[in-house]
Image (cartoon, rainbow, N blue to C red):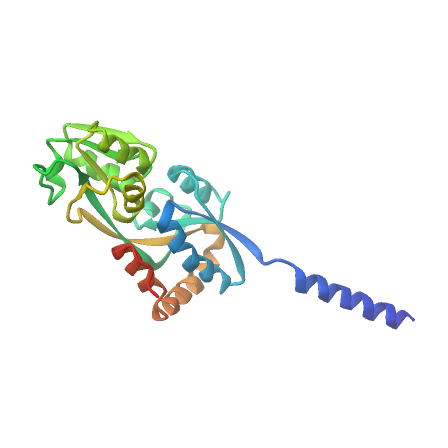
Length: 238
């Protein structure tokens, strides 16, 4: 009888273990819209291969970094390398996920932008929280700088001629232009291109090397290349 009860108890424990959910890791991201949707499968697969369920959170840009740095969330990304210099409790998983491309967006065909110095005579808009963009714009000292919270607001100001130039990522503005009918806006050649990485809070430092190995394997399998194709063309590779 006791043996039978013991066997039933063990079976109950095995059932509990088998039906328990994977540990959740919360990763904040600056990505929005189409770029978020196309990046999420790669990130989800990365964490799945380490037996984690991913919570890919769209927090305000600075808040996401602060929470991850404090350990309130498990990490943040993809982000540029420079983020790690300020948020020192974040550890970079040193295999790029994507390379982002920053451009000047404008309506006036008389404007010609080929490098950062070309924005100097103009009223320039930039999104707050994108530190590397804000710093590059400040360095040039343009005629005027307007800070906004979202790319939607940035392009709205440009459309209404309240700024001359919007500095923003290519893909994160592409969907907005299409949705709002802003497709007459001109895009400059790239002003800046940077690799972007996943960052984990220092409490997960023991996971960094294995995550790097997994990302390298996923690169060989074409995950990053498919994301790059979408970034550059706006199309999903079949």
